[in-house]
Image 1 (cartoon, one colour):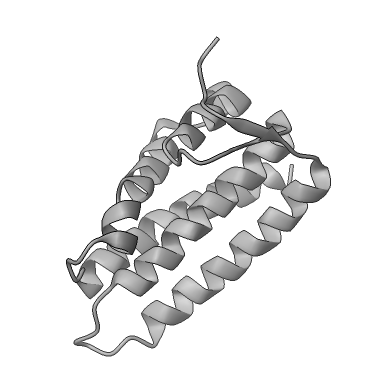
Image 2 (cartoon, rainbow, N blue to C red; image 1 turned 120 degrees about the horizontal axis):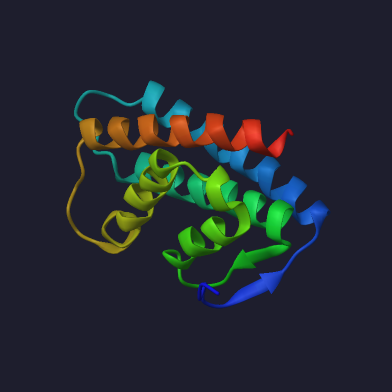
Length: 138
């Protein structure tokens, strides 16, 4: 058995609500990128991207495992692997891991991240979101 860290039981209604929230975050991330001025930094967009990825992961683990990760955002990857097994492609695990690894720097650090970094994160999120939507709508 794989240790996933602290989790909390959730039902199908929670999964549906987290999916709606994820879609809202995705829309906000796209709008943030679309309306950014050339000199803007990317932290705010990236923060929204990361929250979106977490919401999609929560929707997936709630639907397929009846649990969500609590507290340790890296633990969500382990829980997602437990919930989905071979249905979690390595590429999507890498996309999620890349986004989550940036969370502390983006949200609590002092470095101003570039628009290019935000755009790359949004691209990873877009790939993750398309895959998650397909799985969630099965």
